[in-house]
Length: 104
Picture 1 (cartoon, rainbow, N blue to C red):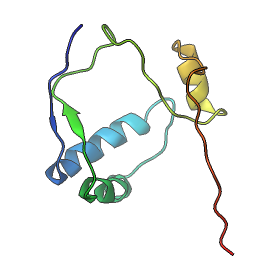
Picture 2 (picture 1 turned 120 degrees about the vertical axis):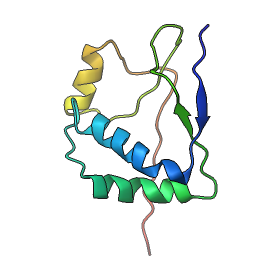
Picture 3 (picture 1 turned 180 degrees about the vertical axis):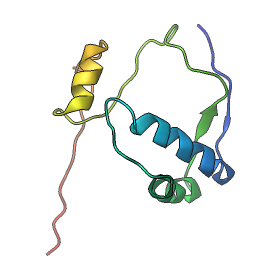
């Protein structure tokens, strides 16, 4: 089994991680249209959270040796179709649960 070299992620990595978010989610299948400022604003509180623990891969991740990956997306739209076209399928062993909290 291959391993991937990683290092801890810190708040100093915010600009680099912002660029990664933009490069990923402004392309197929999402085309989200993130600006640098909006993406940075979304990521900053995550990186600054006291409980945050993150890792940055120091090399390109390869599919070989990976047994399974779980991705979360909505059932409709381009992302679900994109993943299905690339061999992903709905998991029978995992579910996503949600609850709506209403204020009184």
